[in-house]
Amino acid sequence: MTGFDQLVVGPLGASHDRAGFRCGAETLDRYLSRQAGQDIRRRISRVFVATTPAAPATVVGYYTLSALSIELRHLPAATARKLPRHPLPAALIGRLAVRLSAQGHGVGRMLLADAVKRTLSVADQIAVYALVVDALDPAAAGFYEQFGFTRLASFPERLFLPLKSIGPV
Image 1 (cartoon, rainbow, N blue to C red):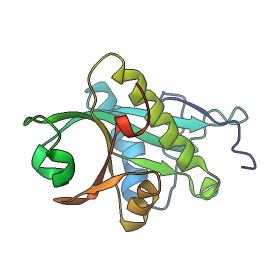
Image 2 (cartoon, rainbow, N blue to C red; image 1 turned 90 degrees about the vertical axis):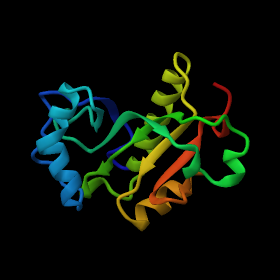
Image 3 (cartoon, helix red, strand yellow; image 1 turned 135 degrees about the horizontal axis):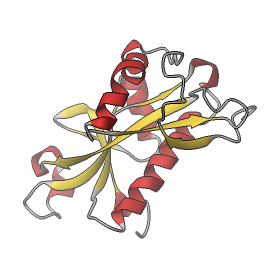
């Protein structure tokens, strides 16, 4: 992973250079530089950043986590048949982005693994049926599908992964 094999992931903090982050998607760059801090203060989402020990202020990548509920009607029929008839608790990765210079080095995969690990640790304390992601575009959706995420029929940019498919909690 050349240079990115010792990443440290933790909460976004004041010492992180949010304005210098560029991933190639203006909406994701703008979110980190302008809105992420507000969302954290308002308890709307948590933002986790990857940095290197050599440059701890430089954001290599980030993702957001928040709570969500999934309406049963949005799930595939075969899945919905096996579940209770009320909204299901879930965790949402609303955004996941990797700095241009780090793309293609497994950073996105590592951020996703970190998000799964954090979600599983919360699922030990509160019920979480699935991890949901909002894909920015079809290429991003393909990235998540390779890890077992399935598209929701009514929201093709939204995918889900039941936590039971990851293993025992």
